[in-house]
Length: 224
Image 1: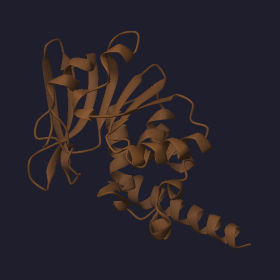
Image 2: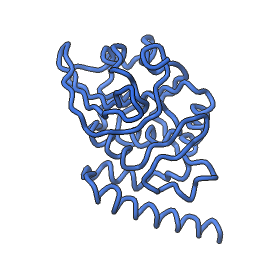
Image 3: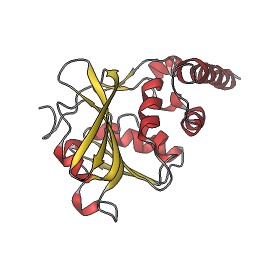
Image 4: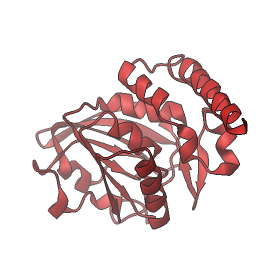
């Protein structure tokens, strides 16, 4: 009975999130909304914060990391315009919540996390949810995906970075397909600009989406 009550409470909170925090703002992509409705966010949140799983704010997941607020997850996903033909690179697996959202829209997701414990936890949760189109790598995300394990084309159609960088790493630009899109928080301060970048030949067309607050990406081509 207690579990059923919990499930009902989560479902009520999820519907409220969809109505007010996503549709009530500027999330209009029906595919993104459907996936956000499908994925149980409470599975990715520590027990101490499960009751807040559908609140529109970031939550701690341990080791100094956070799970992004639902609106930002939906916004970044919507801006990336992912479809079933796309190979997507995600920098910063974290809890795995954004990973699973992408996996339900993409052909395949390649996700990098530098903290072993977080990657292994995400792999366990995503295994339970039967997500079979995800490849995991533990290492420095600022360097991109290991060259010997790239998709057949040698490039990614889409790249999502879920931690802040001082500037867009050249290593990621090189792995983005011509015409491909990258969404990435850029800036040195506590508040960064969320950028949508499209690769056109050797140049990058950039558009500022909004201000955001992300933890810093630590790595050779990011923050020390």
